[in-house]
Length: 371
Ligand SMILES: NC(=O)C1=CN([C@@H]2O[C@H](COP(=O)(O)OP(=O)(O)OC[C@H]3O[C@@H](n4cnc5c(N)ncnc54)[C@H](O)[C@@H]3O)[C@@H](O)[C@H]2O)C=CC1
Ligand SMILES: CC(=O)C(=O)O
Ligand SMILES: [Mg+2]
Image (cartoon, rainbow, N blue to C red; front, side, top):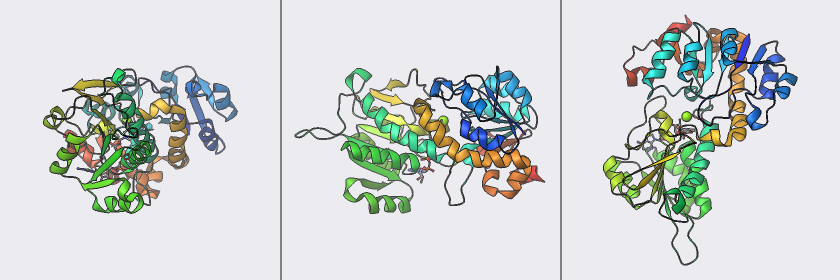
């Protein structure tokens, strides 16, 4: 199979779909890999390294899209990229379609076979192709939040850990999955007071067993969210209902009653965000202020630490990339129901229920496309 890796074009996105070691996994099995010139050069992955791994360097994204049977990316295709997809071509990348009707319509129109990293499931449960980026974003959420609590960044001028004789800050984390747990670990490390909320009591139980009285756990409901948010200095949103738009758990009314200069980091923004006042921002201009509260809502946080993120992502994506190249998408999905769960849009149909439901498209189950 010819596999193509275009250079990412989203704002400050320096990750790349395949590393040279991943390219080697494909070329040693006889596949041809086309990598766009300088696709990885910003993170120290030179064209020479790709060539040494067996790839051919191609000048333009247009040529990559025209020649490849499978496109491997990181971020959701931008409008110009959607327009270059062709009928039956495999697109293997993050998509985040539920809050994005324009992209969904463009992918339906393309006739491509669109597989979303974030809905591929794992044999042991969870979302193994989302998890590494959630680990990165969860850890970064505290770093970003702490920085924006500084006066010069618009925050109230608070040091999360306090100092002897001065109380520490209060970090509230909504959602105790991969993002939430990684944020919690970093927050505990700063010395802040930490409260974690989730709908899953089992998850809270697990955290309580490990972290004991270094954190407070709360069952997530409107009352607990309101009380926590009003006393918070930093709130991290890390909820997920897989494939679906994020629930708006923190209302505009709650935001307006928060401490002036508090910071909210909405990691769930790629699924639409869990604060009513959130809208996506970029690394170039990451924050805005609503009712005195600093909002950080960057939809591709791991792009900021693109080298770490690219290797972590490739560890999780390469196995399915090899299966898709070796068997083609239909057989690879017949053999692996977890990969099949990644199929979001296929040959003009929306095949993921939560996306169809969120956007009002007809839902054609993935199984029908495999027949
Ligand atoms: N902005 C960015 O750059 C990035 C964003 N993300 C996003 O972060 C979000 C979270 O991802 P993960 O932690 O991997 O998901 P996860 O599935 O590991 O965890 C989500 C948690 O949310 C909880 N939850 C669901 N409804 C809730 C509610 N009403 N109240 C409290 N908790 C609730 C679930 O029980 C679960 O524990 C996703 O939308 C993901 O796409 C992930 C990586 C990077
Ligand atoms: C998960 C995701 O959207 C990202 O890593 O950018
Ligand atoms: Mg994203």
